[in-house]
Image (cartoon, rainbow, N blue to C red; front, top):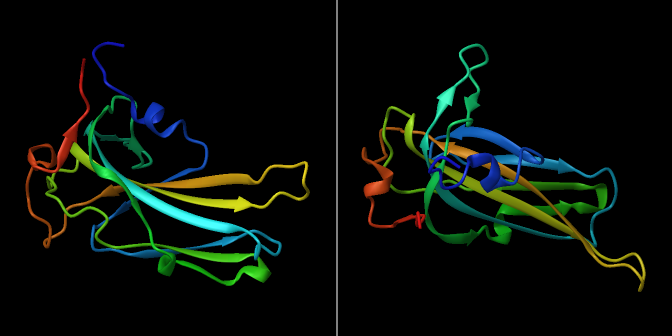
Length: 172
């Protein structure tokens, strides 16, 4: 494995159900999930955690981030629950659920160069459909947003791995 700790792809479990975003820590954004049927009996949950990758490159043609040589080197704290105030179920009988990814997900330092020791907040949005009958089990599915946290003037300039709250992944 050439001394790597964990690839970004392996950490997230592949690219299925993962959307990449680049946001400022002060940015909050809302997404509407349209299930196409009444989801009033479903339960919804969301949480996040910030990880750090050692390096990040970009595709010169598309501008998309390229994680081929990125390794997850640590994290900040444990999973943080996103409160129910950020999950709007008022239109659930129509199949519409709004998820708001809150601001200030990551509050530590960021390097302005955006290519070394990059904090990425992974948001997981989960929904559970109750069992249709006594012979079935409830079904839980999830969708993830991987948010590359970007430097902005209100953020402290600094290396995230030098922050006291950074938890490196042990190498042995």
